[in-house]
Length: 330
Image (cartoon, rainbow, N blue to C red):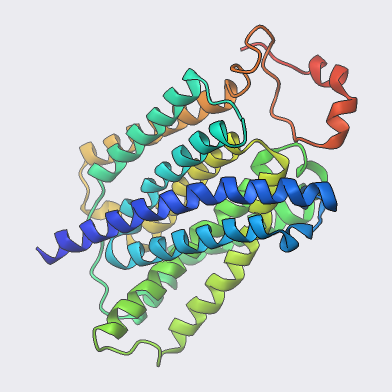
């Protein structure tokens, strides 16, 4: 009964988190646009948005949302909490339609619905998580060979993306910025899970802050959160919000669930039917994301071919003819 109660608390917190985080995308985007008119854009390496009150309002909304999300991980397994981030994507897309005038047409709505259905499918078939009695239990799981190999691979990929791909393709390929955020996020969630459990156990009378492992997780999470924030700002300032949100959601959710399965070995107690159903849920989410991505400009001018995803830079206005040449028919 206690486990059911914990899962309910986790789901409620996760849904609240998604509403705040989804709203923060729009509020921060407004701040970034205002800051871009008075200084160097974030997508070009500028930080004038730090002086914009609207951007800080968005940050406050995101902090509240992340706080609720943080608490959710203390009550429920990552494979249950993370997919509920689909709600933040839907909130963001709808608000972008009404506030930022980034059109969300019927196909975009269907895409959002598919993402939500896929997420619910995963949640309904999520496996039970291992019982954690101490932050040392999480540390033991994090230092097993399988997860160490995953963490090393993620760190190498992040380094390659930052050093090699950001300078060359950051302004033209969304997957570069979002890839960094998602890879870092998959490790961050594991750290957040450890800190959340440490707080929960500490409030229950078992002080976990006397262990160095707890402080290691705290420092690790802070560093990686700053890394994610930096590149998420670049992605939001450079690309359409209605596209950033779903792609970020899919990549982040997929990598987080993979990290959780490697670390906590959730799949051990699952049967074939559950695993296949979860895979179907992922395919459904990917279909929804594809629909959002490929039809994002249909509402504004359905008679013209849909352009390949390009950044919204000032130079684009002067290169309309070149952009048209690389347009593809869907």
